[in-house]
Image (cartoon, rainbow, N blue to C red; front, side, top):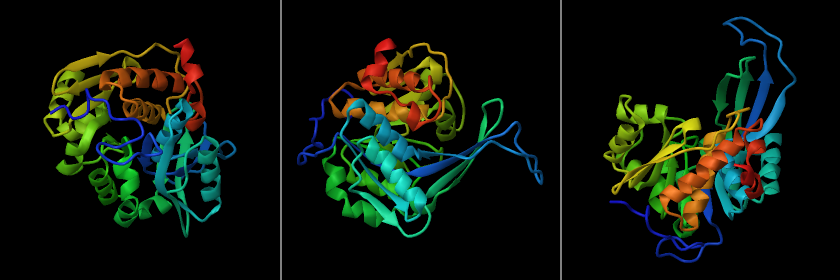
Length: 312
């Protein structure tokens, strides 16, 4: 079945439910990204001198929320931050971009942190300490059931406990699920997706093999999602539902930093779907947003506003 892929969910209301004050609700992680640049990453037992430590707001959930909000979406985030200094920093960053924090819960202890070392070649190594993100629970989902059921689109990723993500999918109307970080997930979660959003590496994990993008997209549909968006980086994306498989090209840009581009894409996609766009049209918009985001350094700091897309 094609689910909502050709339909038009009523903006501001979930399918058949009461009106929502939000276009998109994101359930997910909120992290402080601690970044050090190094000439080369150390070997085991070795110490190297790096740059000054830079702290940036991050986390896949927060990234997707900010990406949608900067484009004009009314966004709420359901997540947890710690009672430490990072928690207040992360709250302020989300508030500055207009994300509603009424469901961002403070948890005693540390916030989620990503420790990122960036080499001279631009490649990075990342260690994530989940902190408060690991305590987002099924009870939190139950307490926010009306928020989730009434939202036109709910965004999910996998930097929160899997049981919590599954519970959120059950409570939501339309689910946009980004299988990142990649992991094996239950059929129930895949069957809730409309669409499932994956890159080629994540698709290969689910399918157990690699193939052409078009074939991967068709095979992913056989796993149960109502629709699939397979992202291809600079080459755009593939959209698949029960009716068709469509190639969506991306504008050509000179990339500066690809960090967080997938989250920019997903946040943009979710917003356009909440406004009633067909999946192909929403994906076409989202690839432009993803392309715009790689023209600047950083994740959230690189995310465009509507006016930034005029040159693409």
